[in-house]
Image 1: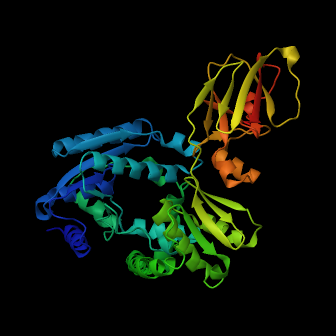
Image 2 (image 1 turned 180 degrees about the vertical axis):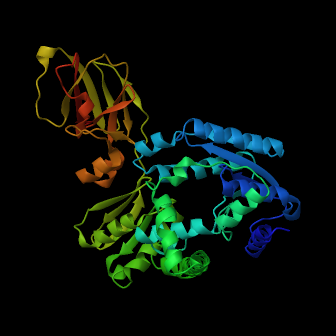
Image 3 (image 1 turned 90 degrees about the vertical axis):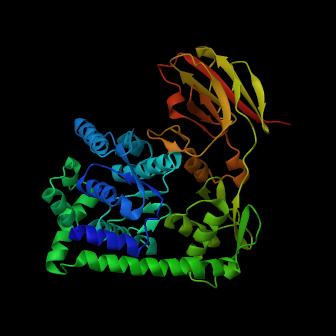
Length: 457
């Protein structure tokens, strides 16, 4: 048996990664690491008593080169009678829309597609081909960017149904094996670009550290990351749940953190408690910035609010900070046409078409006049939802509705039930607050509409 196979088998058995009878879906890019992983699992599927499939994601980044990789992966699997799944996603477009780096967008999409495909096709495990150097890169990048224990614990050996069988194997050993056996693999041209943070770390920074300080850096960091991970798991599984019980009031949609009790505990511990309870009760993950924002409410005036996502808010009360999920207004979308005046929840919304000589701005927030260069097909009123964006009047870029409403410092219930006017699929008016810059009056405007809102009764 080849030494690199022995190392991988020992690593898998030591960490009990593969359960007999499992179907394993390999994240198959066609690069050296994933080719080795898929070939390895095929070779030893009888030993582990598993079935193997492969998924290739075309990121729409490298054009014909990416298409060639996809063809290679399909042929590789066909030659070995391995079920093959090919998905194509526009990663750059997703990154731009969500203001993410291409690397982060690719990671999010990749794991989402892997999970969907695994569920749909009954794969119990997802195997990714991260090697030992990948772990070193991750630890350094996280440390530089200011990570806590989660970041410093590196790439987890397992996470849910995701396993990393090659995390103890060196890249050179993988490449040398493939070349000695004449097993082909793809080369990704973007891997040589130091414009990507991870590539810069891999190609420039870590080689110098290995040469100057520690040739066995990667093995050392892997042990360190496993120690930190064990420490993190102990705190997360033993300490945090016990402390959390002191703040868990057992109410369904609200958590209460008395200000006096908050002062008794270290901020890092309180942050971990917030993270634990928010995940347990509301199913959300809090970033370090959100945690600081919540804790910072203790020094703000009563009624101050921090929005946490998924309709969950932290509110500064008289003697506590409450974290609560606010139930949004149960109001269906309504459609209007010029001349209509319709009730929507506690509001009455009206639309009146104007002639150009009738346009006269009032300065009243309950009335707005918009202009369009083509006749609209549909006016709809609805409650805002997560991810909604518009271009506030006077701005050139888009802004999340949630961020816009946060800046207005509205009452939680007013914020959660804020209605929008949608014209032909685009947000034209955050009703009673501000219109979109795209619907402002201009010399090109041909159609004019007076928008109105008033309280119902």
